[in-house]
Image (cartoon, rainbow, N blue to C red):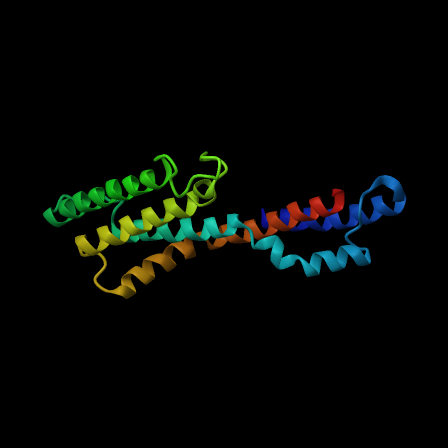
Length: 186
């Protein structure tokens, strides 16, 4: 799949060059022109640094922490049961706090007009969810005894990032392809 995306990107570069040379008044810009090369090299970091990348990293870390903490497994021990109850209480409190920050009149995370979309809440929805899941997983792991030391939490976070690493390559290739299309036809 990655090879296919690379081939499509290369074809896009060649087609944009041929198209802009054959029909200069079409509005299509060539990626092989001076402008195209400057744009691609000058904006490569901006193309990749989107909120989607941050969301992917945050969710990957949270999922890795949930897997490593044992929260997703069924344990019948007293310690695990107690950890589940404490984690559930934490999640109820966390959801309550988020609701107070969004639902109440004149809430802090509402937009200036008092709506949820668009608002600071909608812009931060994925990080808020990821933080809640991550915090619940760390709490569960500490109470259940899965996380004995801070290094255990760190390893769990890295585990999630390692799981997501293959998908990050696809993100990079798709982002380059998407922004290249915007440049060519924009």
